[in-house]
Length: 422
Image 1 (cartoon, rainbow, N blue to C red):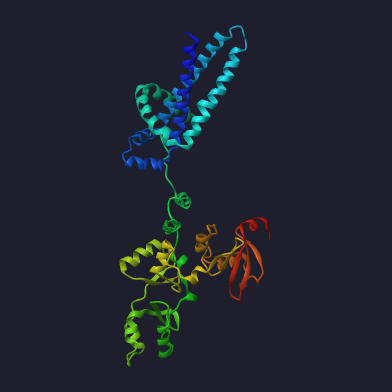
Image 2: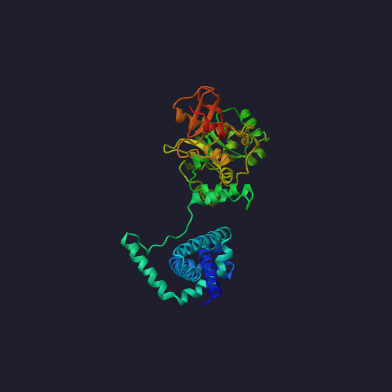
């Protein structure tokens, strides 16, 4: 056989080796979710690739079978060429093997696999057609190779009958959404993340705490009650006697404002306009309570603990804000303020969940619900102004506090956070 033909065969083997190496990498690195999307769009190459990847052991067996044959054949051809060219040189075969290894490494391994990693669909979809045909031709041989391989795996305790189905858990899905900055606006990212958090969030996480509930005390003079109604920032108010544990009902201001100017307006009129109070266990999941609000056509409820004591108040707007994150007032926006040095000035009454959402931190949410509660639980005392601590890996300084709680803190910038030790 002339040298020109031998070099031609060797070149063909290198090209085939590059094809098998690149197509193997491209098929294995295909985005499975994009692949399923293209299958739904009836993309012919995607359909073939998806069908092949249903049994990855078969397609891998076929590719490796072909690639090993091609590489070994190329080595044999290179040896023949070396003997023909340098029959008198004892080291000619070794030199040919070294040169072939270098050439195959560059042109048949690194280059095609790098291309396949960058643009997997470019090689995967055309090669899927080739492998579908080759699998039919060499199926008996592929079956034999895979059977022997499975027997070896079973000897070391690997169950080859169980194939891992690619699926995402909630944290992985949240990571994908967080990284999708070029695909969707930031506000949509926050909405999707809020929906994913609904499963783990309870009404206790988002309720207005007891000490911040605005309501009407029927024990007060009627003039005071009328003044509170006129200046209330809320459309629905709990009505109680002395304290919120003795709630009578909820008052809708739209109803009472019609009656408030009548001469015979009194406390009995207020009572007649009340709706039945709704009580919600503090451990109720947010998504469950949202469905209850919808089915019972109510918008507000009181959160109670295991002893029946009122712990807070939750509204439909609170639940929607957990998803949308847009229904917040300017006052609420000022609870977490980014500083010019990269730190955050934080109102200690803000919830840990809201702080995590704004800053993308990972402060624990299983225990105390507010930043103040997290600090007090960590220090087991009310810290003095100027105290600096490292709270679950985040350095902060107490700026304002009183006898009962921490009011304002500053979380230090990330670079200082790593350097400081307390």
